[in-house]
Image 1 (cartoon, helix red, strand yellow):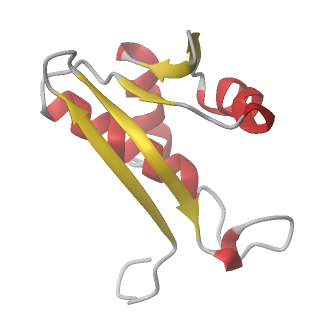
Image 2 (image 1 turned 180 degrees about the vertical axis):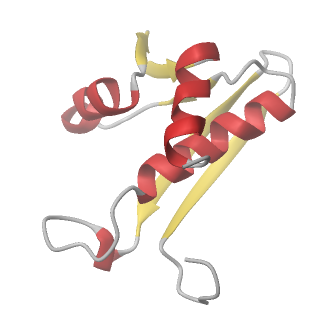
Length: 106
């Protein structure tokens, strides 16, 4: 939140320069922002969108991957339009642009 020192979420990114993608190694919303009684919504979407933006800036075409726990994989596919690529999920190009527009430009 602008003007606040509160940490709402964290993301750990690894750049794979030769393969031209960014991997989300860890993504976490603060405990106050998880579940039905969360204070703020859309934190994970903002963090994922930010990773997509960084991927475009790096010249990777918005390509971002992550390896989710099996129970949450469907959530990433349904909510953020990730695709299945082996053990990882990934997003790129138009879907990444759409996430940036929805979460960071609105």
